Length: 455
Ligand code: HEM
Image 1 (tube, rainbow, N blue to C red):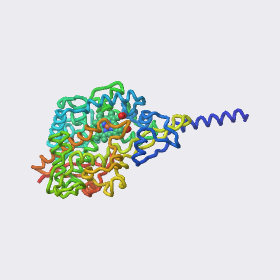
Image 2 (cartoon, rainbow, N blue to C red):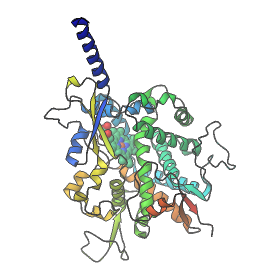
Image 3 (tube, rainbow, N blue to C red):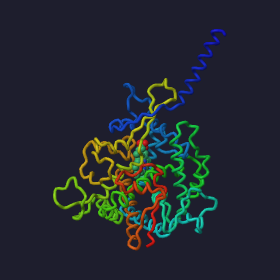
Image 4 (tube, helix red, strand yellow):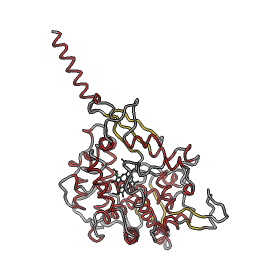
């Protein structure tokens, strides 16, 4: 073989290797150090004094590259240029800026809907005889719900989705899709979310255009859309996806787990749902009978935590966005290859050196005094420059409204007959009452039911 040919072959193989390697995403680096997490999220963490050559928006969009593929979306989570990304955030802001009247209205709506589901089950879902509202839209995973047995995860999902439709898509309650379509969409989103997250190779990510079930449930509710920028999921993913999981866990904690014997927590949440104002959100109920430990109790009167403190503690223990990922590239020689760095937000929220030895325990009282280190480590809504626009008001208060509404309706119904929890897997029920932190996994409570006592 001539030396020229040998050189050519070596060069060709090297080039091929570079191309193959450059397509790969390098192993993940994760940190639960709050200061490092803030740098990772901002896209400015250095590597051997080298800055990230990707812009903060590129770093974010590249780490979220599975989202446009799996959900067909085009929003501030996927856009690489800052102008478009900020336009989306600006579009969201007025939607989540609710007047006092709107807060009252949405809270009433949440209670009326929850009351309806608890009384009648989900329309179109009971296959035993109820009529399906949409022919040909049958999901084999659809949970059968009847009047005496209601799936709790579905309840949290449908409630969160209804509110999102009402507020962000201006769909009047009477014009909204039937429960079966809403639950089908919720389940499709969950399914695709899980399967797209697990894939590291681009070709393995499920494709939006191939997902008939997701497409159909979306079209049944919103009609067809042509462009990714018009995809209703642009708004649904950041709002519904985070909301239903935190609402579910906060409800379980307050009603059936740590809060089971703490009447005041329930009362506080119900009072807030009935009067969803800033003042009520921050008001703690005076409860001379409470046995709860207090951190800042200088007098003998026991003050139970406010709805805000209960919500913040739920967000700490069950942060919906457990990790925030960013892409990093140190020099051009890396080709298109990049590293993914992850801010372990859940890890920051559970560090015992920051939160104390009871870091894994649900204790809303801890919010009466917060150390600077705790304030720094608490990032359920991310951090600058990508902080969630729902952080100051909408997010925490809406969680309070939805949890309070669920508790209020159940309370009301219980005057006639009590509701208990049921699950085929009894270890789920045992864990719930063990005082330990609830399971954070997405599908942990999909088989948990509220069951009406027959006595
Ligand atoms: C429980 C409620 C919510 C939680 C826990 C939450 C959490 C977060 C987090 C962690 C981020 C930062 C993501 C990142 O840096 O990659 C974020 C960003 C964002 N969230 Fe939320 N969110 C919630 C509710 C909402 C709602 C109701 C909306 C309304 C549509 C919304 C819209 C957005 C938008 C547009 C961004 C991007 C901000 C930017 O790129 O600058 N979120 N959210």
